[in-house]
Image (cartoon, rainbow, N blue to C red; front, side, top):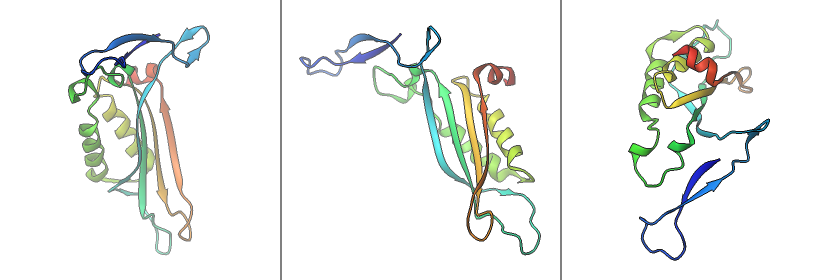
Length: 158
């Protein structure tokens, strides 16, 4: 069960909200669960990954997908304001810095550094990260790596 704040129809002011208990449709066994996610999709990173011989296809783009699992309390807010939500801008800036920081031999190393950067934000409970490059051959195809880190593993990484 979680709480949701709604404004009754007979009130004109945004300050009058009613607390409503809602059962979440996400269940695990008999235990109710709730989820909130921030999804960063299709972010083209300014990075250099891999070493390529003459004549090999060099990727034009390295594209990041990142899902941050956070508390629903940072999404179901009773008033508008950045102090009530997770501010992801500093994390995006850190990801950009890590991508530009050095040449990487592998996508996996950059993903690892991004995952550990996420551990510095206590609001983040778990992550799913994917990094893909395009093109792979003859201006077509993409190749990517995905990683999901659950809450328990994420806590041990901190």
